[in-house]
Image (cartoon, helix red, strand yellow):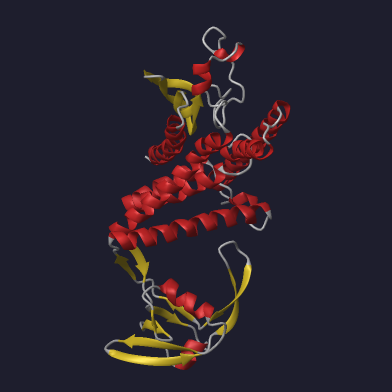
Length: 372
């Protein structure tokens, strides 16, 4: 079932991505010749109108083939040779063909069509996060599970099972809010309102400096009072307006984390052996699906943002690479020379294949060699 869940997750996200390209191509009156889920040999296909809809053998991607494009909009082939009797590739385009051709659209139209794929992935994540907010979000409360000996909280009289209700008069309900308030104190004394059974208590505590690891494994200076969460979880529900606000905030948080992770990876702060591939995705998809529909949807939202951001990287075989070419044309009023595009495509393909091989290698080491 793990593989099935992975195919479902990737299939939905690839469909959403390609749907973005497809819809905007139609909006700009570009003829879409093929819409494929997957790469490689055709498993199933059906012609509906002017477009052939395909299910292809390798489910790790997809493509939209547009008339006059000279290839697939992302990945696959850079130069798709067509039968000259069936296509204008070897002859002059007619006025009608130019009207429906991707290559004959102005740069802004091509930019919009290419950008639509990643944007649709981000929109999917945004909608998913909003839906999750209405379904209920598990939240860790501010109940204390452990008070460390000889730390500021212990010296002030904080005890296990105390519930923090406010920091400096500001109500807190979630552990992350409480931890953030401590960090923002910069070591200045703070007042904690605490509920202990039926009693309401107040404590003044001065957070102590400490060095901790952040999510990327870097040492960061911060402040703490010496307490640990009890791990008590409650489910929070949001009305539609609150869900929009919360879902939007969460989407931007994940986008920021994804971009920061890529930067840290390039700086080698995040080691290359953390890069995962299809096996890692399949394993995570199975685990999240087993945890429930909400967990699986949250996983898909995270994966969708990663897919959208990765496709915007300035690598020629990805959407971001196409955008660079079209932006150049928009600014300098002339297209990038064909030879330059070809060299860039070859370099981009080599980089992409290298990244795929690294991901496969890491997956094999992680799950089969037992070093992960």
